[in-house]
Picture 1 (cartoon, rainbow, N blue to C red):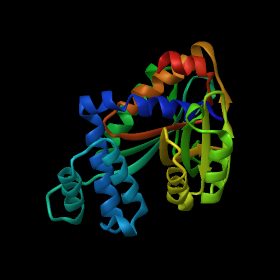
Picture 2: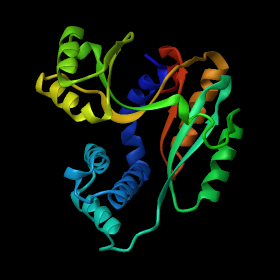
Picture 3: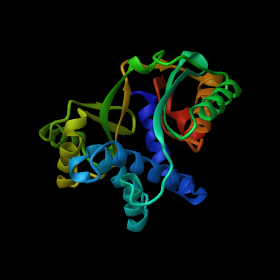
Length: 248
């Protein structure tokens, strides 16, 4: 399993700290608003919006906040004109990074992210430089201590998963985006606790990094994820779990 998926599990556990800073709610509301504006405002007909709403509910966001974001998207309430932009770059050790941002000022966001990359021994690249290295997939993480590998494998494959991968402490279930909800439901029906679940960008290949490069990459990840405009950061690093746990 690529180290980045394990990092996402660590970030999931740290989500409460983000919520206290107020940034998580702001980012989730922005994602709901953009998803509703770009598609059907009814989540039953808009999987992207349904996913954004579920992430907001998982973060204990009040229903009224969610409803207001959808109303802003439909024009019932005043809102800002956000657009989705992917920013691409490289971290230490040649790690490819893809930033999914929602911004109302491309130039400002570009300048901010360029400065963050430089500060952490990386560089912002031209559009198209690294996005082709990633595929859109559903990824579900399960703690090995919470369920047997056979039970997870059976439930996941019955639900339509493409693959189940194993590392020292977790099982990573990979699905086509269209099968994501079915696989998640199959795991829940089997009573298998889920560490994290999201439709994300999965690297086709990973780059092993350790030592100072690994720490620089993780600091860059955190700095990018902390930016107000950045929704998610995807990377193709493979970092030892001991280093991930140390930073996480």
